[in-house]
Length: 372
Image (cartoon, rainbow, N blue to C red; front, side, top):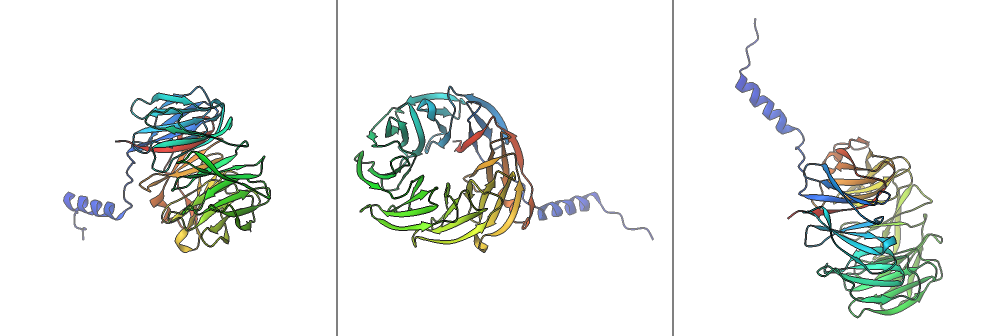
């Protein structure tokens, strides 16, 4: 007996139903990813709607970091050896304005409220305000010693550490004045404010420790010994956990900043480096194995997936819509893109890349700029 024929209409309906049961087709993000390429003295631009590379923006200095302008479709790029901040317009893909405020810079952060950027300079030693409306040097706070790292609090303070002087300097941004300088017993290499601004967490790589210091008094609250040399910092989205990576252990140290205690350490692949978080996942770059390790925050940091990316991944950032993780591969000079939704179905398995885009020589920092 012959099998009944299937009508074309029935076949199309069945195909549509099957497609509806599959994974939802990914959509792009309406913005550009600006990537600082240190060795090629340029900023690559990737269209996150089409996932295509646009013409790169050449610079006259090696860039080290990129920030997204808080209100306009522009990127701010720091060239530390030139002491210069460049502003790149997302519409023209060219440097529109630039400002030089010193000889050698260290790093750059947006001020609370986003009206200015503050740039930390090693030569001359100081913290300089760059208002974003004028992009000209504003207030300048002179520092007593060459600085190495700084952080800004939501309530208008800066914390600056100097390895050479073994000091922590607390600054009022509103008054553009030093409030106090705290002498440290160990060599301080990094600093972050506790999210409520009441304590500073100062890291020491040589000492393998994290020291909590009271902002109002400058007194040490506690010094926490660590199983690794703290180099990278990352808060979770509700700021209740601080994640640290560094040499000495193939793991991430988890700190409870409000209880000032080391909660635990979790394995995160070989020599984890840069990190990023979503609502559910903690992602860590593993430059020695060219992978990204993904841990589930909601299930006590159990392994979700390992993603093979390019050569030498170090920096990871998440798109504002939480759809994609963008991974900078320093040695291979490309941008690996991971679709976050694809991780849920890949527990304990190798997860695929969404795509890989060449960007330039030694990408070291990136920022996502939303298009208006």
